[in-house]
Length: 161
Image 1 (cartoon, rainbow, N blue to C red):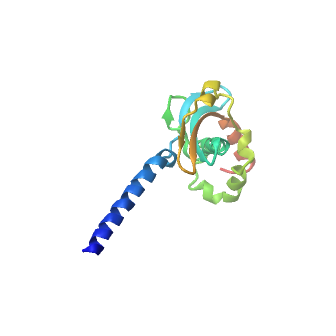
Image 2 (tube, rainbow, N blue to C red):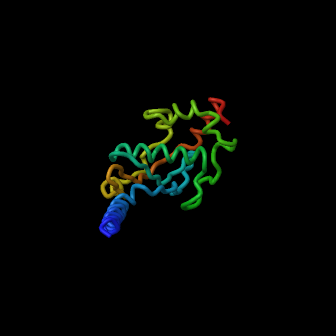
Image 3 (cartoon, rainbow, N blue to C red):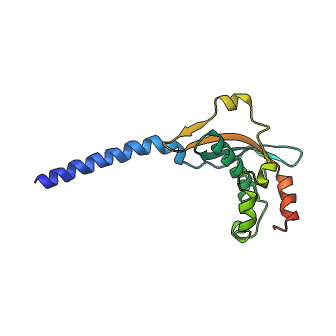
């Protein structure tokens, strides 16, 4: 009898602990898609992108990488019209075929940073940014401009098709 009571109390305490931790970290565990905000006349696209990181800078850099990744491999399918829903690469699993190239391209300070900028970010967004925090991670939304034409040219120069 005592054993059954102890098991019941222990499982109740454990379940409350799981629910309370899950509700604190929900925002940083959800993944968002990149959303098109507009097409520029120079061949670049303005997108709303999310990134996760230990702090603001890590999350912002990850959001920039996610935007470039979406343009190259998935295309931008949501948001206002103008952005191409087609990815730059159509070959099956190009991230695996050209793994070494893309590892260096998306490394911290890699070539991706030449093609993704925060020039469309408004001061209001920087001050009151859409942030979701978990215990160890935080997620940030940033507005970035991805030079789609520049990335396409760079990939062709490196024989990535």
